[in-house]
Image (tube, rainbow, N blue to C red):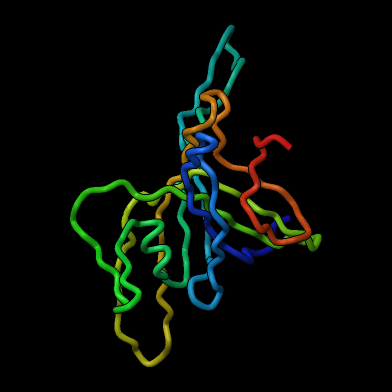
Length: 190
């Protein structure tokens, strides 16, 4: 049984010319004290359907168009500004520039790791994720006590576009005794 989120990370998606396919970069784990994950929710995308015959339900199913994801982080860090939202990061000036031109958000894999009641880890991979919208910016004054403000991100996990149409991978989860060091691809040949 899931107990708690213990780590949130992501891996950039890269196009491999040699292999003519997408590959995943190294997992970039969020530092818990700076931008760790607080809350996560994945809501299925896709239409449900039911088929009736002779007055009975004989078939039910759902199209799998991925997930709408909400992820709450402690704060936005420069890597996420660049690799999730496509903003220009100037590390010398310690600034981020956001421009008005329309552009597609970058794609990445999202990795959520939970501890479980049996002492193992449950790792969930979402293979083709994009920001669904720019993050909301807000702030308020302190009123005598510290009230933390957190970053809510809205993401979309889509079926992986380079897979065969009938087997487009969206999500994979598995139990391990160790934290993952690379994106696990259950479709890859052993």
